[in-house]
Image 1 (cartoon, one colour):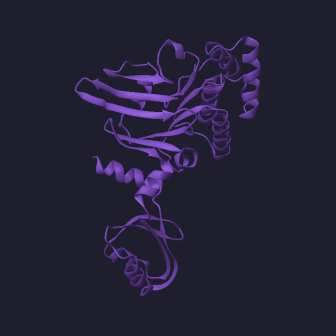
Image 2 (image 1 turned 60 degrees about the horizontal axis):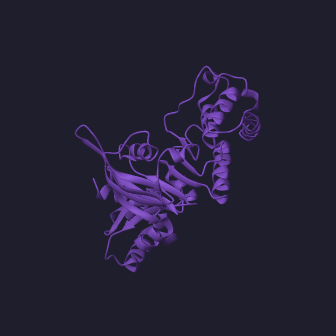
Image 3 (image 1 turned 90 degrees about the vertical axis):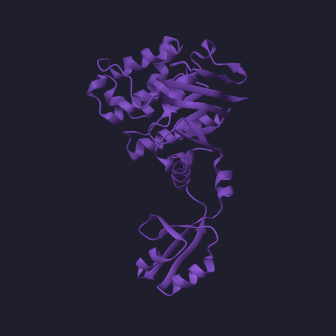
Length: 298
């Protein structure tokens, strides 16, 4: 029971945007669909939703070909927003809820509940063009979710949201998922993907470069990252052979350990520079995995 993409390919003139892409997304999962700008993510989502037609390949949901049978069963939050600027917030949401199959009484009730949850009460009679970018984002998000679809496709859903509303949306995504909703989530914020997603894939230049369970991917890559903090001359750390700086925080440095390097020798060298506060081997973050895998496929 899953969303299956088989051999999806799409050319735009002489550019291959998506190249024989095959992915399986488990029903009931939160799936991170990742890639650099221009990787083919948006084109892929639009092919899934039949907004554009693939040159070859097919899409199925729970064993059935994707088609008119999916009307009203999914929600799509595109990166470029598509609201009617002259409509007022409440009437716009009721209009969109009706399009997605809700009866008027049900639409009015749900719109009221969502407006309350996203703290949009004072803006319910404002025109969309009068709202801030963040509030427009909230309206678009409500429109995507209000009909309680089986499948959600969220492209940069936290764009324009402050930390409070980001937390509210994360809570809503998790709640929906616990009720069985499948979420396909695309973002450049790797920390948010890492927090929410069980499974991920990374595509680059239209091709799949990595997919699977995030925890298993990290485990397979091993503890390649060394976190070091010391009292002393930290410039020495950049001179140690076999270490490559990949990140700096306020309280430690992160290094990628090259194959074959002895960490005991590194520790001995670091101790000569000063008092060691932290010396810890950790699994790579999703951001580090992303940079590595995309870099390998340039």
